[in-house]
Image (cartoon, rainbow, N blue to C red; front, side, top):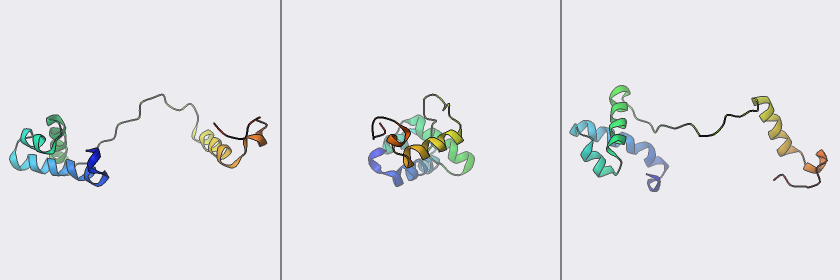
Length: 95
C-alpha cells in the first residue's frame, strides 16, 4: 500500500470492502488487491457495521510522557525561543 500513495491508502480499503460485499468472499478480493485475507475481512466487517471504512491508527509504542502539557509547552518555547548560551550552557546548539 505504501507505493500507492496517501490518497490510495484511504480509497483501497473501501474498494476492497465493496468488492468483498459484491462477491461475498474476501479471498479473491485479497488476492487481487494484494492484502491479507484477514485485512480484507476486517475492512469488510467495518463496512458492514458502519457503511464506511477508514485506515485504523495504532498507538505509538513507548513510554507515556512524564511531562505535563504545560511543561511540554514551556520546553518547546525554551528550545525555539532561547539560545542555549543565554541559559548558561557552554555550547550554542541544542543537540
